[in-house]
Amino acid sequence: MQKSRRRLLVASLPVVMAAGLSTALAAPAHADTGSSLTLAESHQQAFVAGGTGTYTITVGNAGPGATDGTATKVTGTLPTGVTALAVGGSGWSCKTSPSLTCTRSDVLGPRQAYLSITLTVGISPSLAGKSVTSSFRVARGGPTTFQDEGSIAVKDTISQSQRQTQTQTQTQTVNVKCPSDHNKRSAV
Image: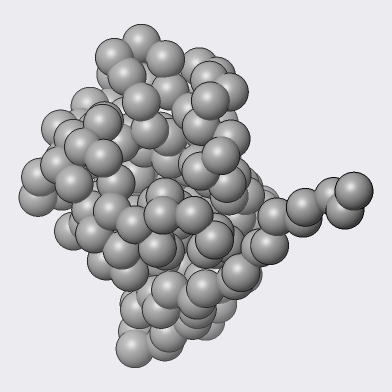
Protein backbone atom coordinates (compact mmCIF):
# COMPACT_ATOMS: atom_id res chain seq x y z
CA MET A 1 0.00 0.00 0.00
CA GLN A 2 1.48 3.31 -1.06
CA LYS A 3 1.21 6.28 1.30
CA SER A 4 -0.23 9.44 -0.19
CA ARG A 5 1.76 12.65 0.08
CA ARG A 6 0.30 16.11 0.29
CA ARG A 7 1.81 18.38 -2.33
CA LEU A 8 2.70 21.95 -1.37
CA LEU A 9 2.67 24.50 -4.16
CA VAL A 10 4.23 27.92 -3.68
CA ALA A 11 2.48 31.04 -4.95
CA SER A 12 3.86 34.54 -5.02
CA LEU A 13 1.75 37.54 -4.02
CA PRO A 14 3.23 40.86 -5.17
CA VAL A 15 3.46 43.49 -2.46
CA VAL A 16 4.06 47.12 -3.38
CA MET A 17 6.43 48.68 -0.87
CA ALA A 18 6.86 52.35 -0.03
CA ALA A 19 9.05 54.63 -2.14
CA GLY A 20 8.25 52.67 -5.29
CA LEU A 21 10.02 49.50 -4.18
CA SER A 22 8.27 46.19 -4.62
CA THR A 23 8.84 42.69 -3.41
CA ALA A 24 7.08 39.34 -3.58
CA LEU A 25 5.73 37.78 -0.43
CA ALA A 26 5.80 34.00 -0.75
CA ALA A 27 2.97 31.99 0.77
CA PRO A 28 1.89 28.39 0.28
CA ALA A 29 -0.93 27.71 -2.12
CA HIS A 30 -2.37 24.33 -1.28
CA ALA A 31 -3.71 21.69 -3.61
CA ASP A 32 -7.10 22.11 -1.90
CA THR A 33 -9.45 25.06 -2.41
CA GLY A 34 -8.78 26.95 0.85
CA SER A 35 -7.54 30.49 1.30
CA SER A 36 -4.10 31.40 2.61
CA LEU A 37 -3.74 34.81 4.25
CA THR A 38 -0.49 36.77 3.99
CA LEU A 39 0.74 39.78 5.93
CA ALA A 40 3.10 42.54 4.76
CA GLU A 41 4.36 45.82 6.27
CA SER A 42 6.06 48.85 4.78
CA HIS A 43 6.96 52.40 5.74
CA GLN A 44 8.52 55.25 3.79
CA GLN A 45 10.78 56.99 6.27
CA ALA A 46 13.23 55.99 8.95
CA PHE A 47 11.83 56.36 12.45
CA VAL A 48 13.30 59.31 14.37
CA ALA A 49 13.62 59.49 18.16
CA GLY A 50 11.12 61.96 19.61
CA GLY A 51 9.02 61.90 16.42
CA THR A 52 6.30 59.81 14.88
CA GLY A 53 6.34 56.98 12.37
CA THR A 54 3.79 55.22 10.22
CA TYR A 55 3.44 51.50 9.47
CA THR A 56 1.33 50.36 6.50
CA ILE A 57 0.04 46.82 7.08
CA THR A 58 -1.54 44.81 4.26
CA VAL A 59 -3.44 41.51 4.48
CA GLY A 60 -3.64 39.49 1.27
CA ASN A 61 -4.97 36.12 0.17
CA ALA A 62 -2.55 33.92 -1.77
CA GLY A 63 -5.49 31.60 -2.53
CA PRO A 64 -6.34 29.44 -4.31
CA GLY A 65 -9.81 29.98 -2.78
CA ALA A 66 -11.62 32.95 -1.22
CA THR A 67 -11.94 33.45 2.53
CA ASP A 68 -15.24 32.27 3.97
CA GLY A 69 -16.39 35.52 5.61
CA THR A 70 -15.34 34.62 9.16
CA ALA A 71 -13.55 37.40 11.03
CA THR A 72 -10.02 38.36 10.01
CA LYS A 73 -8.05 39.92 12.87
CA VAL A 74 -4.70 41.74 12.78
CA THR A 75 -2.92 42.31 16.09
CA GLY A 76 0.27 44.20 16.79
CA THR A 77 2.89 44.22 19.51
CA LEU A 78 5.04 47.33 19.78
CA PRO A 79 8.32 47.55 21.70
CA THR A 80 8.72 49.64 24.86
CA GLY A 81 9.08 53.29 23.86
CA VAL A 82 6.94 52.96 20.72
CA THR A 83 3.31 53.95 21.36
CA ALA A 84 0.29 53.50 19.08
CA LEU A 85 -1.25 56.94 18.48
CA ALA A 86 -3.83 56.10 15.79
CA VAL A 87 -4.81 53.08 13.70
CA GLY A 88 -7.38 52.57 10.95
CA GLY A 89 -8.13 51.51 7.42
CA SER A 90 -11.10 51.39 5.07
CA GLY A 91 -13.29 48.41 6.01
CA TRP A 92 -11.35 47.73 9.23
CA SER A 93 -12.65 48.20 12.79
CA CYS A 94 -9.54 49.17 14.80
CA LYS A 95 -8.55 50.08 18.35
CA THR A 96 -5.29 50.83 20.15
CA SER A 97 -6.43 50.03 23.69
CA PRO A 98 -6.25 47.75 25.57
CA SER A 99 -4.31 46.17 22.70
CA LEU A 100 -3.63 47.02 19.06
CA THR A 101 -6.32 45.17 17.07
CA CYS A 102 -8.10 45.52 13.70
CA THR A 103 -10.90 43.21 12.49
CA ARG A 104 -13.20 42.74 9.50
CA SER A 105 -15.48 39.96 8.25
CA ASP A 106 -15.93 40.43 4.50
CA VAL A 107 -14.85 37.83 1.93
CA LEU A 108 -11.42 38.25 0.31
CA GLY A 109 -10.92 36.63 -3.09
CA PRO A 110 -7.81 34.71 -4.13
CA ARG A 111 -4.75 36.79 -5.11
CA GLN A 112 -6.40 39.93 -3.71
CA ALA A 113 -5.65 42.16 -0.71
CA TYR A 114 -7.76 44.20 1.68
CA LEU A 115 -7.15 47.96 1.75
CA SER A 116 -4.18 48.63 4.03
CA ILE A 117 -4.20 49.46 7.73
CA THR A 118 -2.27 52.61 8.68
CA LEU A 119 -0.70 52.67 12.15
CA THR A 120 0.83 55.93 13.43
CA VAL A 121 3.23 55.56 16.37
CA GLY A 122 5.07 57.92 18.69
CA ILE A 123 8.77 57.19 19.26
CA SER A 124 10.40 57.94 22.60
CA PRO A 125 13.52 60.16 22.54
CA SER A 126 15.24 57.48 24.68
CA LEU A 127 15.30 55.12 21.66
CA ALA A 128 17.83 57.22 19.68
CA GLY A 129 20.39 54.94 18.04
CA LYS A 130 18.68 51.74 19.23
CA SER A 131 17.12 48.91 17.24
CA VAL A 132 13.53 47.93 18.02
CA THR A 133 11.28 45.15 16.74
CA SER A 134 7.53 45.36 16.23
CA SER A 135 5.46 42.31 15.36
CA PHE A 136 2.13 41.86 13.63
CA ARG A 137 -0.12 38.75 13.34
CA VAL A 138 -3.11 37.86 11.20
CA ALA A 139 -5.70 35.29 12.30
CA ARG A 140 -9.18 34.11 11.27
CA GLY A 141 -12.12 32.79 13.24
CA GLY A 142 -14.08 34.34 16.04
CA PRO A 143 -15.80 35.49 18.01
CA THR A 144 -13.49 34.32 20.82
CA THR A 145 -11.20 31.74 19.19
CA PHE A 146 -8.90 32.62 16.31
CA GLN A 147 -6.56 30.48 14.19
CA ASP A 148 -3.16 32.03 13.44
CA GLU A 149 -2.56 32.52 9.71
CA GLY A 150 0.81 34.27 9.73
CA SER A 151 3.06 36.83 11.38
CA ILE A 152 5.85 39.27 10.58
CA ALA A 153 8.53 40.91 12.69
CA VAL A 154 9.77 44.36 11.63
CA LYS A 155 13.14 45.57 12.92
CA ASP A 156 14.02 49.27 12.73
CA THR A 157 17.01 51.32 13.88
CA ILE A 158 15.82 54.60 15.39
CA SER A 159 17.65 57.68 14.05
CA GLN A 160 18.82 60.40 16.44
CA SER A 161 17.53 63.30 14.35
CA GLN A 162 15.88 64.11 11.03
CA ARG A 163 19.08 65.72 9.75
CA GLN A 164 20.91 62.40 9.70
CA THR A 165 20.96 60.33 6.56
CA GLN A 166 17.82 58.27 6.86
CA THR A 167 18.50 54.60 6.35
CA GLN A 168 16.25 51.74 7.23
CA THR A 169 16.89 48.13 8.05
CA GLN A 170 13.80 45.98 7.83
CA THR A 171 13.51 42.28 8.52
CA GLN A 172 10.26 40.46 7.88
CA THR A 173 9.52 36.89 8.88
CA VAL A 174 6.37 35.31 7.50
CA ASN A 175 4.83 32.21 9.05
CA VAL A 176 1.85 30.77 7.19
CA LYS A 177 -0.30 27.78 8.14
CA CYS A 178 -2.04 25.45 5.72
CA PRO A 179 -5.85 25.59 5.48
CA SER A 180 -5.96 21.98 6.69
CA ASP A 181 -4.51 23.26 9.97
CA HIS A 182 -7.66 25.39 10.56
CA ASN A 183 -9.11 22.56 12.62
CA LYS A 184 -6.51 23.32 15.30
CA ARG A 185 -7.69 26.52 17.02
CA SER A 186 -5.58 28.84 19.16
CA ALA A 187 -6.26 32.17 20.83
CA VAL A 188 -4.57 35.33 19.57
